[in-house]
Every structure is written in C-alpha cells, then in structure tokens.
Image 1: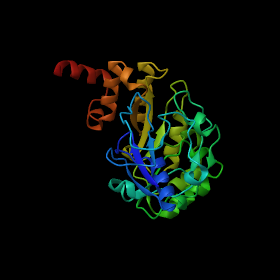
Image 2: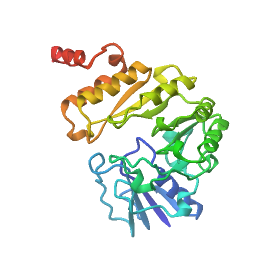
Image 3: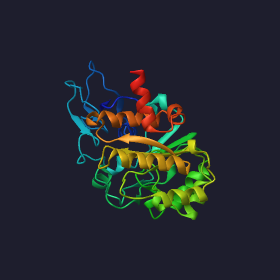
Image 4: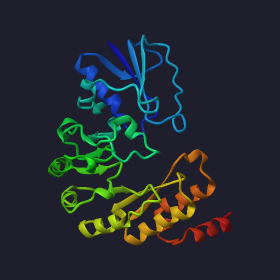
Length: 299
C-alpha cells in the first residue's frame, strides 16, 4: 500500500497518532510519506488535535482511494486500533524533534473539568496505559502527555521507571498538586526535570495548602523551575485570576496564564497573559495595575 500522512495542525509539535500509524504501516511493509498533491495513495490519514477554533483543515485531497480523519480536532469517535495504539511511534517522520520521546504512561483523569475533553475521551479513571519502554528508545528527553499521572494507582512504579531512565522528563500537561505525597515527591526528586508543571484552574478551589506542602517536600526551590498553569476566561473574574497569580508568586511558583477560548477573550485578559508570561516584565512590574498604566503611557 501507498500511505499518505497529513498533520493538519502543522509541524510545530509531533502528531503522536500519525507516528504510530506510520510505524504500523511500515511494519507491514507499506510505503509511507507525507501526503503530496502530485502523488497517488491507497489511503491518506488526516490528523489534528485542535478544533476549528485554532486549527483549520484546509487540505483538499483528491488523489487517494480512501481518506481517514482522526484526532480530537475532528471528534472523539475515531480511535486507533489497539495494535496501532500500542506500537512504538515512528520518530523518523519528525526529524526536527530527534532525541525526544513522546507518549502516554497513563490514560484518563478523575477530575472531569468542564473545559477539558480528557474524561470524555479517555474516561474518569487514570489507568496505566504503557510502560516507558514501549515508546522510549533511549532518547535524551521524554515528553509525557498524560492528563493525570499521579491519579493512577501504579504511578509510583511509573515514576521509578522515569527516574531509572536518566533522561530529562517533561510532564507537559502538568501534575495534580492535590495528589502530592511525601512518597511521590521523593520519587519526583530523583527524576531529571528542567521544570515541573502544575495547574490551578478553578478559582473556587483554594490549593494553597497543597502548593505549600510541595515546597516543603521538594528539592526544587527555584521558582523558574516550578510553573503553574492558571486558566483564565473560564468561570473566573479578573480579581480571582489576579489572586491566583499573586498567591503563586508569593509562594515561590511561576504562574503561566492559559486563556480559554482565546479568540473571544476580552482585551484585559490578553493583557494579563502578556504581563504574566513575559517573565522579564513580570519580575520587574510587580502589579497588573502598574503594567496597564505603562501600556497607556506607551500607547
């Protein structure tokens, strides 16, 4: 078979589904390449993670006998077959990301947050999906895509695997600060991490006690290595956003603003994001009010 691949979101981040599809077809002896309009294909796979709000499908394909569209950007119905899901990804199709392994050790999350698709896609339980060896081939860096690794009953075993790898580990989706214990922090202390990510999404939930507990247990004291996603423009007021941001900074963490439905977010939320996420500004201009004043003067 002749197989074409289309990464609808672009090539700024590797598409894990396409890497697995490529590995599966090549294992069967099929020819696989990025789709070209001048070629002819038995099947073309189009995959995207993001919806129309952020990623437009502008690809019109007329040179394939079959076109398969998948990924959360198209919906939750079209899933990989089990033998494809469990195969080691074909990292060769993204040479620009050589030296980095991507994958899931767990699937699912018990939180069921309204802004997140994970519970609908993967379920309300965090379950072990793979051992590290299933997608890590000795790369110097590992990027985990797990929604809530610490909620998995086997998470200590998985953290031990990460520590034993000796690779740099990035928990890209963040760790659940509410599930921090002395035991799993001890394991996190053994893992090579340039930065740990957490999240404080719900302004109605006070997480300060958990963040303080982590600071007491962790060996990481540099706030530049402790990032916390702060979701704004989703059931929160500007005052609630500022409280989380300022509280995190006071506790020694580095807040990072994520905007829900950014295309329709009010200008003040966009200003808030620029103030917080530009650390050269955030570390010098101590209040959002002062930042807005500086904007008016420069404008």
